[in-house]
Length: 148
Ligand code: RB5
Image 1 (tube, rainbow, N blue to C red):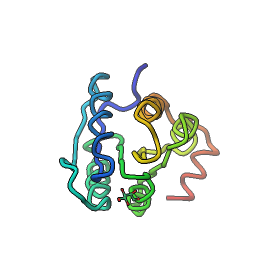
Image 2: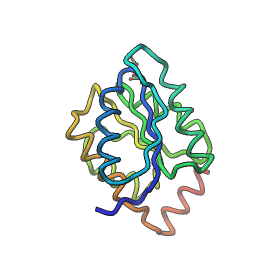
Image 3: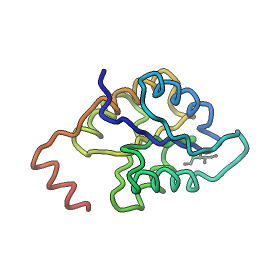
């Protein structure tokens, strides 16, 4: 598998901390440069702080994509999607969502919920997300332009 992205920022709150550690190993095994932007302990923390870290890294073009993990993925996606240029997709229910989020929506942040998805499914979802290119199609571009 050839990843679409070479540099990825990742962050979680306390509820996503164990899964974040596992997914960093997955990304590093593919020789992807991983920017771990926290949290670094299981102490209770606020997911918007970590969404902001990944969004800033992405908008500053330090990375090409991001991964955000909380209990459900939902809080992270709400926080990240407040920013222009961010297309964060929650993909807890399988690889099809991850594939279509990339192919049709050009999603640039994958959001996962550690309380809702197992580690193997999360890994498969991440691999699908980073392996799938945006379909350069006029209709998809037009719809993304309308969002922008
Ligand atoms: C933390 O308890 C939890 O609310 C948070 O991780 C996330 O699921 C919010 O969307």
